[in-house]
Each structure stands twice: as C-alpha cells, then as structure tokens.
Amino acid sequence: MTGIGGATAGFKFREAGGRDLSRGRNEVKAKTPVEAIGLVVEAVSGSGLPKVEAVGYRVVHPGAKLDRHQRITPEVMRDLEEAVVFAPLHDPAVIEVIKEMMERFPDVGHYACFDTVFHETMPEAATTYAIPLKYRECGVRRYGFHGLSCESIVRQLRGFDGGVPRRMVIAHLGSGCSVTALVDGRSVDTTMGLTPTGGVVMGTRPGDLDPGLVLYLLRQMEGDRVSALETMLNHDAGMVALSRMPNDMKAVREAATQGDAKAKLAVEIFARSVKKAVGGFVALMGGADAVVFAGGIGEHDARSRAEILGGMEKMGISMNSALNEGKGDAIRRVSASDSVTAVLVVPAKEDWMIAVHVERMSRSVSADVVETSG
Image (cartoon, rainbow, N blue to C red; front, side, top):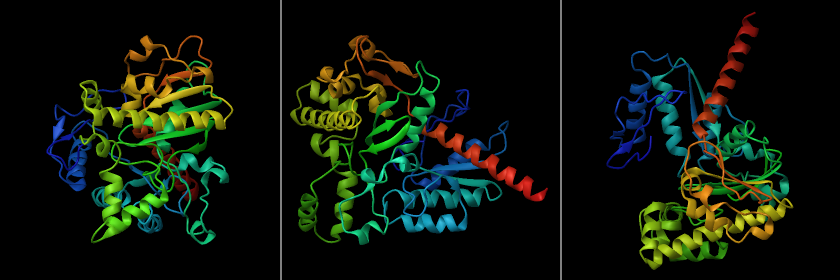
C-alpha cells in the first residue's frame, strides 16, 4: 500500500504467482497506519484465501541491540522502543503497526525484518564514525539501509547469467536512495549511515551535509529547534527543496525538459551525487564487475541511469543506449557489448525478501517446538 495519509492510497494485493487479488480496489482511503492495517486484514481474510500463519514487518532501524531478523517477543519490543532514538521518524509508525497486528492476529508468529542486517558484514573501518568513544559505545555507528533490497538483488542474480558478480555496486534509487558496494554478495560499504537521511541526494532528504551546516541550521530554527530541523531534513530537503516541486522524479524531469532551471539543477545535483558514490565504490574495490540499478528511479528512469554512468567509459563502464531505453520487469542487461563492467537493472523485491525470512524463521520455530515436545 502506498500514499497512506493522502487523499487516496494505492492498494496492490497479489498472490505469489502474480495474480491480482485486490478485486478492483486499486485506490482506497487510508488516513492512518491503523486504517491501512484494517484494509490489509480485510483483504487477507477474504473468502477462499489460506489462513494467516505468520506476519512479517519491515523495520528500518533495529537500534544497537538487535543485529538479525527475529521473532517479535516482549523483549524485542522493548529493544524496538529503545531504538526510536535512532529513527524517531520511522520506527514509531512500524511499532504502532506491529502492536495493532499482534492484537488482530494474537495466535500467530510476528517477525521483524531489519533493513540494516545485510550490512552487518561491513568492516569496522566502514561502520565507525570519527567521534568520541563514549558515543560509539552507545551504538552510534554507520548501520546502512535498503539491506532487504540489496539482499533480494543478490538472490535474484544467483540464477542469472554468470551468477552473482564478485565486485558489485548497487544503486537503489527511489524516494530514498543509497549506493552499496558488495564483494562476493556481501556488503562492504554503503552511503547511508546512522540513519536513512545521509548519503546521496534523495527525494525529500539532503544526503550528506557538512556538520557545520547542520549546526548553522539549528541556530536559525525557532521553537523546538531539534524537531523543526529533523522535519526539514527528512521531509523538506533533497529534490523537493531544489526543484520546489512535489516528490516526483518524472514530473521534475518533464519540468527540466521544458526549461525549468530549478528542476534542471535538481536533476543535475541528484545524478552528480549518485555518480560520485558509484565511482568512489568502484575505486574502493579496485574495479567493478557489475553496476546494478534498482528502486523506482533506478528501474524506470533511463535518463538517470545514463547521466549517472555517463563519462565512466575509462573506468570500463559503458551503456547501450537502446537497451537502456527498453522496459521490463525482469532482470535485464543495459551495458554495451564491449563494457568491462556489466550494467544491470534488477527489480527490488523487499516484500519477497521479508516473506523468505519469515518462512525460514517460522519453520525454525516449528522445528524447535517439535523437538522440544518430542
């Protein structure tokens, strides 16, 4: 479901094979997460559908204590409540959703899948901030996000021609954007840090900023300065601040094409920031066997892909413009035939990845119950 809180929300409900089960209700009204939950519960409880056996949740930030996907227990809930300090604009909403769903489905397992777990393989040199030890000991480090997307891409590539590239850069570009470096399918560095606000320029978030600029902005705020600055950096910065348009890359590109200077600058800054991240990770790994684009922009905006990789021919990265302009929902190669580095477009399947983990954890719990009772 998308657009919760707006005039209308988008609703998609499909079975694993892709068959539409929404019964024509593609637009619904959901002003709050709880209202959205009601619609989801109604959909999954429809006649002819199997009984709900488990519920999985995408949780953005696990905090300092949780480092793996796991079943939600009272102890885990307490840890999630503590993690709100790291993600006050993300975790409270999912905690509300979890509590509501646990009331509606009290007899099934509930499982938290974290966007950070995939990045637990990053070396200490990639996760450590150059700040005093007392803050690092409180869990302040670079966690990384979009991990479920990255993991889904690695899994999909296992069955693709050539398998998983040894050195790979994944650019997950949507409303939120991040770039991740992988070696042998494992994360070694990524652009997002303690929170999903940092890294490259995004739809409503600025990406990395000079810490001195953050202090300057804080001094300019009135009233509850911290809250005001937090809201601005997460909702009123990035592309929307540059273009002065709604968070819609397609609309911004159209405006830029028609001569809107602000929109043109916004697109240029966005592509530049992602290009710097991709190029930096290619240099970090001593080259790349593949660059992968995923997410709403990464999968559907051919011009963004071309602008980001344009001029990288000397790094062994070149694109086939005709292939790049093509469309499709499956994995596809858009690199030139003589490109040393493969350029791929791969759909991000975070929901599928959550389902995979929930099934695995559910089976593990069932096996433990059988072993204990036996």
